[in-house]
Image (cartoon, rainbow, N blue to C red; front, top):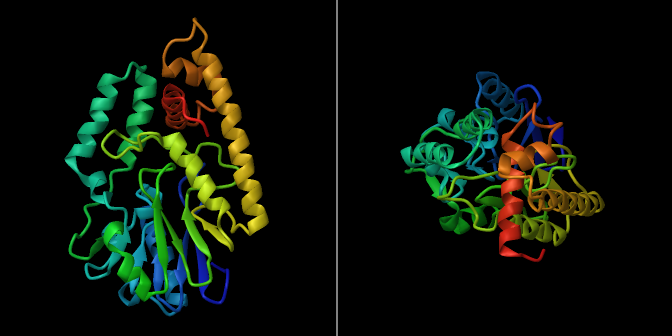
Amino acid sequence: MIKITENIIQIKLKQGKNHPDVNVYVLLKEKVLIDIGPKSVNTLNLLKKELASLGLSFETLNLIILTHHHVDHVGLLEYLPSGLRIVGPDHLDFYSSDIYKKSIQKLLVDDDLSIEFKNDIEKQLTTEIIPSINRKNYVPFSESKKILQQFGLTAVELSGHSSEDIVITDSENNCFTGDIIIPKIFFNCIYEVDKVRPKHQRWSYYHELNFLDSLVNLVLPGHGDILKLEELKKAVLVNRKRMKRTEKKIIRELNKETVNGVENVCRNVFQSFLPYSKFLPFSEVVSVIESNDERINY
């Protein structure tokens, strides 16, 4: 647990092997929790313990805000008291629906990928299935403005990293940005199934980076260290340059007559990373193909 300001506490929650810790944040005065971390009993117990050390519990919190739907940020949903108000993405319940599960299977049937790739993609997308949410106390972002104002908070909804990224700003202009910017993380545009996917995901992600460039105080990301303005500017610049390099490599591969299909491009560009994940290179290549097809100028 780290004290960021007099009012902001950062709690780091462990994920599995080879995955970065997840940051959740407590706003002490408002009794608001931002994100809840990955699903595991150990995570649940640690979060309860850290809250208790601050004189808080799930029962005494006023509000939880979820920055996006990825399971490492919403995994403990099913353990929350039924009366606790939650603000989050409008379409969060899509990820517990049969439609989402069928969409995964449709993708795997339609795409011309090897069994090895399909298994990895299916595993990752299936991992994102979340518990059903209690609609009685769940407030979709589009209806949350007045509730957030009660706690001196404002928020905007963007897309790019995920289909719905919520950025929260407190009364001192500190920004909680979820996973939009994570220094030293290579893959930013995470593939989504068709129903909720941004039409131009890579274009949208560049706009998220532009938004970050407009911020004026601390940036509190979903993983890694807090970013001061100078560190944020550097991280955004590095991200843009890295993305441009990757786009050139992918487009060069696509223009080769001997290269056919997303999987071959993944193997040629991200060969050393494939033992760790095939889903992330797949996400990156698809986002570049779509942006290149639309001839979008970033």
